[in-house]
Amino acid sequence: YMNPGRWRHIAATYADLGLLPHDFSLDGFIYDQNPKRDLTGLYFTLALLALVSAIFLYIYRTNRRLARALAESQKAQKALSVSEERHRLLADHASDVIWTMDVEGRFTYISPSVEKLRGYSVDEVMHQSLDEALMPDSVPIAAAGLGQAITAVRAGEPVVDFRGELEQPCKDGSTVWTEVTVTGIRNEAGEFVGLLGVTRDISERKRAQEQVIFLAQHDTLTKLPNRTLFSDRLRQAIVNARREKKQLALMYLDLDKFKPINDNLGHAIGDVLLQAVAGRIQTCVRESDTVARIGGDEFVVLLNTIASAQGALGVAEKIRIALEQPFDLVGHCLTVSTSIGVALYPDHGHEEPELSKNADTAMYWAKKAGRNAVRLYHIEPPGP
Image (cartoon, rainbow, N blue to C red; front, top):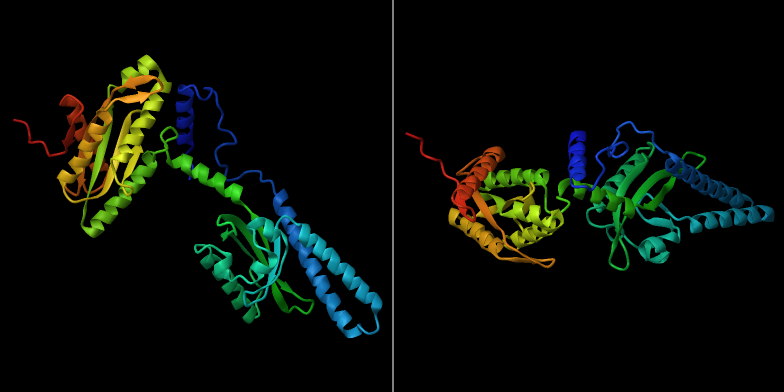
């Protein structure tokens, strides 16, 4: 999903702003589909699973032998006790949560580390159903994996290992993202005896992934959607409007008198002003609408549904009046205004490119009219 050219352009832009050196290298930053992977964590996990599986299998075999010779072999009883103690020490001190489950989906063992992960005691978790142990969006994922395991067992087929990212509720009301790995356990006779799972906290990794996604889709200065995300939302809004036979409005905004502020007071003041402008625009629209920054002092607004052209023009006028009010920022009283062009779907375009072009044209008309104005796109009459 990465475009190397776009990242190089972003790096160049940051360099022009003095935030990065001009010779900044993107080596190691852009995703490499053939990286030299560090498999240490995988080997450790596999070793842990193998070790725990071996311990469970050993205990099971030992129990069978002791059941036949319990009255005669005190030595075997002692060996079983030692083996169980070793298993408890291993499971109880593991940072990941180790658990077993029967084919009906009932927990048969959970390591004490679950309390550190989710705040619930082992006894509380042992009595939780799948719906209680997982957040709603994660329940179908786990249920599908469990269903496949049950089907395989009943058909006498090997259980396919499951690996998935699941969100789980914590006792304090928060949630934690976990990576769950599940495999089947069979005894020495090849009989299925249950499922062995390892649950690992991946909250930090998920937060890092979400941050990367956010930065790829949002303007770093104003935290508004960038051109890429806005285009996607506009396309979706057009599809919905077409399906529901409704109108939507697209506005192009360009600040007036912004360049002198940037030139005379510096980019730092200009950046603070852009952040304040973004905030004012957002107060003028609904939560369901979208405000985005697509250039230096250029913004766009998407009104997902409108009742009429006058309604859209009313919102545009509200934005224009809000932005012409003075900004009291970092010891400066700053004054700007904005020229706004408005285009409507379907009157002024049925697809994103046409609608965007016409909104931009209307904004240019507002500039030509003397700035600090709102103009609705219309088809200009042909010249003489």
